Each structure stands twice: as C-alpha cells, then as structure tokens.
Length: 340
Image (cartoon, rainbow, N blue to C red; front, side, top):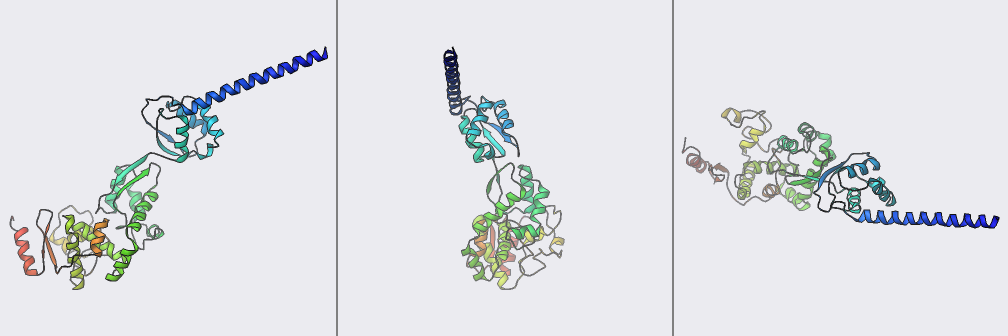
C-alpha cells in the first residue's frame, strides 16, 4: 500500500513537472516569437517619449498603448532577461509597430533619440541666433543670450572673451529634444575650435594678430559681404587700412553698437562714440559683431594681395574697390549718388 502511494506521488510529481516544462517551453516559444515579430508590419512611425526616471512597467504599458508592442508583460520579461532595465535612456524617439520588440529595445537602450535640425546662417549675432533657436524649439532666447554673455561660461569653453559673439560657428546642427542650451552652445563653440586649426592659429600669429582679433576681423568681413567671392578683397582693404593706421569706417560695426537699430543708418549714428564705431575709433572694434563662417575667417587670415583702401556698394551685392580717395569719391558718385 505504501509503495503504491509512493508510486502515485512519484507519477504525479513527474506529471506536474512535465506540465510545468511543457508550459515553460510553450511560454519560451511564445516570447521568442514575440521578440522577433513586428506586431504591425505596415504601421507608421510615431513619437514616443521616455521621461527621466520612468519605470520599465510604465514604459512597457505606454509601448503597448501606442501599438508599438503587442504584450507589455512579455516586453518586461524580455528586458529583464537581457538585463537592460537600467539601460533604457530618456528621450524622444520615432518608433513603429513595424519593428520587432527586439529592435525596439535596442533603440531604447542605445539612445537613438529623435534629433531636431537647426541651420545657423553665417553672419548672425548672438541675439539673432537666440531668436532662431527659440523659434525652432531649441531653447529659450533669453537663456541662450544670458549664457553667451556669461564670461565665466565663455572661459569654461576656452574662449578668453567677455562674450561668445564670434564663436558660435554657423552650420547645421542636430540635437535631441532634451538637449540644454549649454549643450547646444558647447557644440557650436566646439565646432569653431575644430575649424580654427593650429595652422590657422600659427598664421594669425605670423600676421601679428591674436585669434580673437582675427575673429573680430572675420565678423566684419562677413557682414560686409554681398558677394561671397569678394571676401578676400574686403579683407585686403581692412588689412591695408590697419597697416596705415586708418580708421576702418565699417557701417556694420556702427550698427552693432546701436541699441534698437531701426534698419536705417544715419549721419548721426556715424558720429556716436561707441566701442564699435570704427568711424570714431582707430583699429578693430571692441569685439566681434557677428558669427563668421570658415570662408570669412580664411579671408581674414589670407587677404588678397591688393593696394585697395576703399570700397563702395554698387547696389547689386558687389562692390567697387579703389586705391585712392579720389577714385573712391568717383565711385561713390557713380554708384551711390547717380539715382539720388
């Protein structure tokens, strides 16, 4: 009797074990199929956000709610089996049910977040870039401007200037939604530092200029440029005038020093004493007046070999260059006064 009961217990145990193994095997097969199979092969991508500190349970629930996965429990089990729970990265993603859960997890742990694109044109100043950043959803204009005018922040980025004017390199940038103003500015300044190579630093020294002075000069060339091909010619005029201790007399520098400029430069503006008015001061203005591109920096370092001392707009985006005041006055009559 005892042996029969023991046999029944043993048989029952094996039966239970068999059932458990069968269930486990079926569950394993189901999860294996789950992780490899896109739930909605024709689905379009949708935005999906993981906030900082969000739990795996909440993430899985939101993934299922957005039809990106079909089973939140299986996703949680799979994530824990991969020991990836703490590797999930906060951010904004572009996800689709056309991807398998395995692919989704790889995206979320690698941090391949959705990136926003912003293009900074050459020649914008700090405030103009800040306005553009706010319009594009990058960061608040005031926060951006305050950081760029923070001397200690500038110094922390290796820029020995009172502001970051001139060092926010114009280019196309891609950044995640959670990127801070500091992150974006660091990227721009870092790009400037890569562009201004040791070769260019040595060239500036050979010319007798500091890097900062070259940036100032390049910003003036950028703002005077109507036709990009004229950059080296405009640079030559500024270099030649500096050598002769002549005032640079550049309208864009005057404009930069005017608060709330209305777009119409007047004679009274040319007489206003500011650190940027190159009609009133000799040499370079106090600092850069814009953020120049690589070609303007290159022109400042390698001006065309001319004897030009003057240039005047032809009102067609190009300029007439002159060597003497007499030639210049004639050019002014021809191109500026002929229709007045």
